[in-house]
Image 1: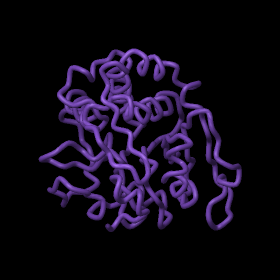
Image 2: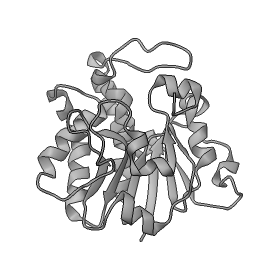
Image 3: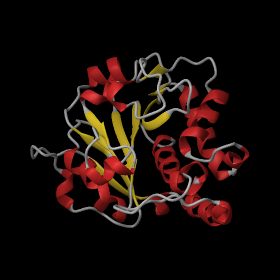
Length: 252
């Protein structure tokens, strides 16, 4: 089984919180970091215990010229919700298509042209705690008979900070292609909200209807942070939201 993780961040986000992601990464799978014209120090190809592991850095704009085209085309109507350390968030992330487009272009670029069996998207505000085996990835994170895995919140949009894709299933590749098309063709602006999780749900419900998927948090039925109740909580923390990022602590 060939497995990889993918994430994206820029220099500002690396300094703010994503350095924890790289410094703590201890899973035995290739990691792809889509950056914005900037490379972290070379020593981050080593895990905390000193073992060498494949970490591949890709310039997101060189790989995805369509991303800059999307930004230029839609900046006038976009609502900027970027926040910085120790500064209050003042705008609505639900209408910030550009902020969350980077993750869509990063992961679809990798998955539409790779030979991995499984690819997992992981938000850059994740910090790793415990390594995991291929066996447990299949058992807990993405069974082989499922096309995708995600944190389902039935009364709210899905939490897409960690999502698994079974690329051995042709329907998964079709879903990924159509997810990217929602951005390259500006189809997301027909939806009620423009952030990635809401758009991802719209595409999932349209193209994976009736397809077997895996819920990473089957006991979650709340709107707030679901991470402590997920299968991933044993292995990593998600510093979701500005308050947790500023503190560097998931439990506040």
